[in-house]
Amino acid sequence: MDFYDLDLNDLVLDALDDMNFAETTPIQEHAIPPILEGRDVMGIAQTGTGKTAAYLLPILSLLQDGGFPKDAINCIVMSPTRELAQQIDQALQGFSYYLNDISSVAVYGGNDGIRYEQEKRGMQKGADVIIATPGRLISHLSLGNVNLSRVSFFVLDEADRMLDMGFYEDIIQIAKFLPEKRQTIMFSATMPDKILELAHSILHDPVEVKLAVSKPADGIHQSAYICYETQKLDIIKHLFKDETPQRVIIFTSSKIKTRDLAISLSRAGFNTRAMHSDLSQSERDEVMYLFRSNQIDILVATDIVARGIDIDDIQIVINYDVPHDEEDYVHRIGRTARAGKGGRAITLVSEKDQPAFRQIERFLEKEVEKSPIPEELGETPQYTGRGDARNRGRHRRRGSGERHKRPAKPHGDRKKQETPAAMADNDQGKEQTGKKKKRHNNNRRRKSGNDTAN
Image (cartoon, rainbow, N blue to C red; front, side, top):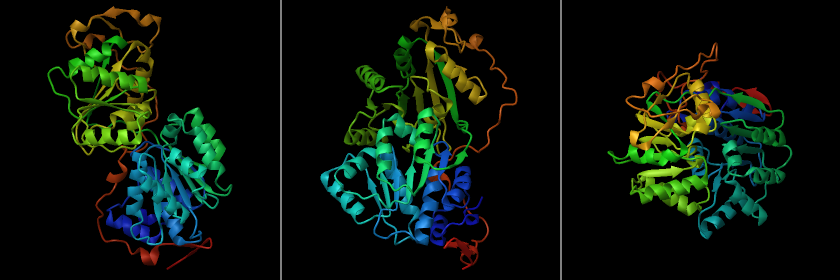
C-alpha cells in the first residue's frame, strides 16, 4: 500500500517524500488506519518491520490536525532501553520535520544532572510527545516533575522486552497517572501470558494486528554444534583458534552466564566485554561505543542487545544457549547479514536445549547444519530433539558428521509465511516511480469527525 492511500496529514507526507518512504510495510498498512480511527491497537510484529512508523505517523498526523491541548503532554511512548528511546526520538525528528508546532522530549537514565533538568523543563512546558524509559519516568513522577492527566496517547514499544527486564509494575504504576479516556497502543514481538495480562489491564477493546514471524535472511549461514554444556566454552575457543574474531556477538540466557563467559574469554586472551541490564547506563554506553568502533572483538550479551540496537556489520552471532522460542532466535541471528551482507549464526545445543532447537528447526522448515566438534573435546550427545533420558547415547563426531543427520519431519499443510522478510525501520524507503501524487487536492482531512476536500 502507498502512504498516500492512508489518511495522513499533508505535512507528514511531505516528510515521508523527503525520506523516500513510498510504500507501507504490512504492520504499517494494518495498524495505521485503526490508530487514525482512535482505536486501541495490540500489534504483534518482529523488530525491524517498521512498527515505529506504524504508531508515530498516525499520532503525529492526529496531533497536527489539532484538537489537543497546547500546554499539556499529549503522548507518552514507553521504551525498554535508552538505546531504543534514542532511535524512536530520531525517527520522530524525521517524521515531524515540517510540524513546527509539535515538540518532543526524550527521557532516559544514565546522564548528568543538566540533562535531568532539561527533561524536567521540557515536560513541565507541555511537550507534545515524551519518549521515556520506565525507570526514568517513574523518577520524574515521584518528584512531581510531570503531569500526565491530559495524555491522549499511551504507547508501549517492545512490551515483551520491558516485561523481561522487570518493568511490569512500573508500567502499571505509570498507567495510574493517565486519564481513563485515552488511546493505548502496544507493540510486542511475542505474546507470553504476562503480555496478555498487561494487555487486559490497560487496553480497551483493541484491534489486534498480528504478523507471521519472518524467516531469517537468506544471507545467514546457520549451523549448530550438538554438545554437552561443559564443552561450550572450548568450542568457542576452537572456533577462533585459527581466525581472529571480529564483530562477534555471543548471546546467553542469563546475566550470570554473560559475566562468567566474558571473564573466561578475556582470560583466554580474547578482546571481550559483557553487556547486560545490571550495567549502569554509562557502562552500557561505553561498551557499545567500544564495540561499534572495533575496539572490542567479542560482545557477550543477554537479549537486551537483540532488539532495538542497530549494528549493521556483525560477522558472527553465536547462541551460547538456545533461545526459548523461534521469535527470539530470529531476533538474535538477525543481528548479522544486514543491509544485504552475509553472516554466520552458530548455535550451541546442549542436551536440555534439544527440544527447543528442534522446534526452531520446525519453524525454519529445514534441519540446521550440524558441525562436528573437535575430537579432542571428547564424546557428544546424540541429537534426537527430545532432551530426555533416551538422549544419553554417546558418540564421537568424526569427519563431516553427516551420518548423524536426521531428516526433518514433514509439517503437513503448515501455514506459509504471510509477510515478506522483515525490513529495518530505517531501510523501508523505496525509490518512487512516476510523478508525485497531488495530495493537496486529494488528501482527505479529518475535522470534527467529517471528511472534507481541500
